[in-house]
Image 1 (cartoon, rainbow, N blue to C red):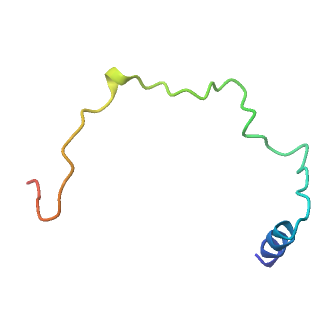
Image 2 (image 1 turned 45 degrees about the vertical axis):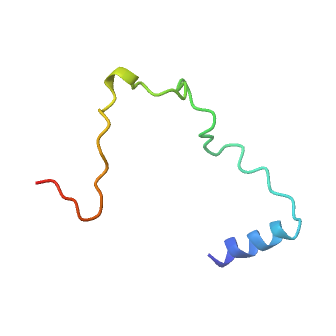
Length: 58
């Protein structure tokens, strides 16, 4: 963890971030995921009244 702390200090002092590993995983470039949820408003759970302190359901 010392390495991470040292690197954060370097970046805070103005060091340039590295480009990363070009062969590494790139989660921002998924293959096929549209970023949209398959859930629809008509299948969402019904809203419920939030529980309040001192009020319990049995």
